[in-house]
Length: 401
Ligand code: PLP
Image (cartoon, rainbow, N blue to C red; front, side, top):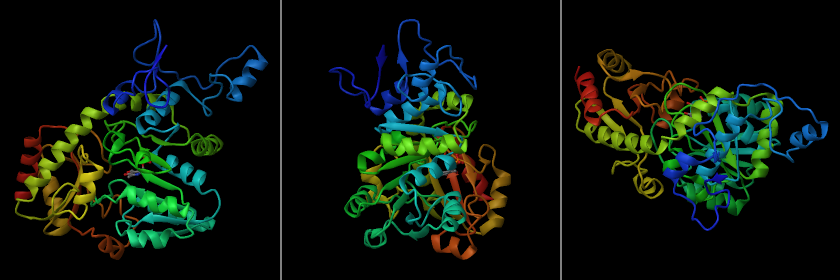
């Protein structure tokens, strides 16, 4: 049997690099093994020996007994993402939000102060405000790019939550510095690494306690599944898994199968997404009608120094721009696109735009959006893997209207 990755010893052979891990992680190949995993849709497995069932149910023997507890496709995805992120354990759930929910509760099981980045994904903000605050948690939204503010906010906190690249303005907080402060203060540090993917950034290597992804986005990569994953220590992920099993949020086998298939090409996709997004950002800086372009690797981005250090291989496909003329101009541009589509998600092979005012940030008040820098002309772009010139041409002709 051959296994790959960093979490399992591989004789004297050094651990393979992330692009190779993406291709091989999570699988164990022996003679006559299927090279691509079989899809196991069984909700339940049959046993003939009570001791055997008991041992599997206790986790003392490998195997599966009931689909809510485990499934071979889900397990393969969990191991693969854990190996790729350099984690001990992984948990896959039905969407990014359930992975986040289970992990927050694993790291901060009792009401505590949660410090979260100010520029948080709107769905996460809604979860903290509408589910955690009523349950007795205190939530502070802080600009984590300001390390003095982070240091003050983390005193006495029970959890700090950041995103590798923020939504929609693509700022990159200094995860390494935040992790150092969190360690000093004894505060667990959870990172939503959805926008970067484990190819471009591995927050555990920078000192984070746990990491989650909306697998729906880059890891799946084809806009055809909903899934989430969380990785971290066996203890933290064990606690998240127990909650996910109790509340019935595990990922179904087919979505796990699709997500693993997506993961295999993650490295090549992230390279192309990264090349295309910076090409489009630079081209847009010269387009009439575009007031501002947001990309962490543009020299005028406030995140440029940190992003250049933390994302040396590129920043993925996410960027944003402010269109002069607000909502009406955005609507006019949308009607002229030939290639680009409006879609309220991201991370697929195709270039899409979304409009934060009515999508990711719709739960915020106009004033809150303005404070974050999200204007009525702000458009978020998930740059796909098409030819860069074709993408630039489509934006140029649509905006020139
Ligand atoms: N985190 C980020 C950064 C996201 O963009 C999203 C979804 O857009 C989520 C989490 C939630 O993931 P899901 O839709 O898979 O539940």
